Length: 480
Ligand code: A5A
Ligand code: ZN
Image (cartoon, rainbow, N blue to C red; front, top):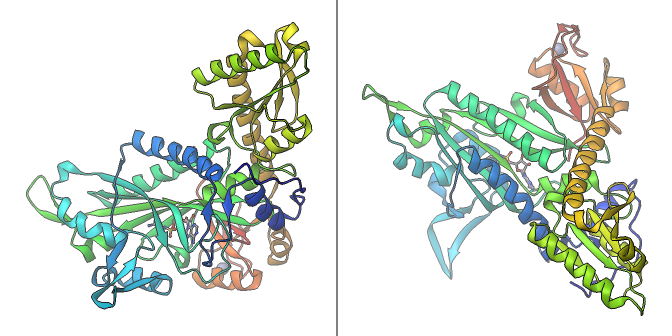
């Protein structure tokens, strides 16, 4: 994509929406010019970030006993229509394939909006004995949802290209509950690797996944003060097991219904990472997912040009050998233009090597996250770069965590909430009655995210609708 020369300045991050849209283009993440609403194209650079990001989730799932699988995209209408709650939740969002060539299909086929109804008919066949449980599978696929809310690249798509969904089967309700807890922990760990701190909460009953007993969700705070749901973990009880007849044999030979969970994330994980860490100069990528982790800039003068280039190549080779993704920029761009270009791309470390550095046997190292400059002795360059990556990751996470914490505002009245959520996430007491929850949402013109899974605020306070004393608080936010 060398032809994309962008000397124009990025809008300030204060205008988050403009900044985000421009950054996806200037940072070469997504091209939004595909002629179908809600469908976008990955630039190779963006796709490389995606690949590194999804390598992390694969590693985390594989190491915790999940196995990767791949199911068909098309779901026959009769399977899709089996689970009543599930249909109600998704029927307005499904794309249907009705024809093969000119012939009308006997059974229309749904493009999966999620894969319960593709996977569970097979689970009926596969699940046999208690000894083979739990079953923990996942797939990374594209799914289709005819979204009617405002579509946005990486955030709300009609073709979700990077839908990671896990589907597990257990012997008891309690084991499935424990699995949902594990899933929340695994996602938290995943987001920590992206230096993204998260809020974890149990969604109110009216906002749970269609067909689930309950939904635990993970949200991130976006720079405009809105919450983005970046992962959900659902306890499915035996609702789908009843519908799809998924039974296992107990040790005493009885056939009993299984319990299930499912949990998913999407390219919203990249939207959050990019939005939270980026700045007015462009992307700021956590080193683990940066396609280029180190850019080496030779500072060339005629006389010592050859020696400088040779030193750069030597550094590059040593970094590469250590598994670090480095690149030498020996193009004829001015150094300033090179800095601009690689800063836009979020490269975590820039090494500058000129004749004087060579004499001192050092490189100048510049951090993308905070702009600090230091000297690294050339013989210790690999260790120095690795230490730099760690420091950058820690700084990004600490900064984002402080930002998140400073934007959670404890409120006692709806008036306070309405003001707070213009730029923050609010907490408010709630008696846990549905009618009060719905009344609050209506009055606040914002959603209840849910009851926090972590912090317990046990000072009793009054529900702002009915006045009842309660120890429960909920997160409230404007959402995407
Ligand atoms: N089968 C379960 C896992 C499921 O489908 N859950 S879900 O509907 O909540 O979707 C999982 C996650 O995908 C959500 O938490 C959200 O982060 C993401 N997601 C949902 N719809 C999306 C869309 N239209 N565009 C991008 N991401 C989306
Ligand atoms: Zn109440």
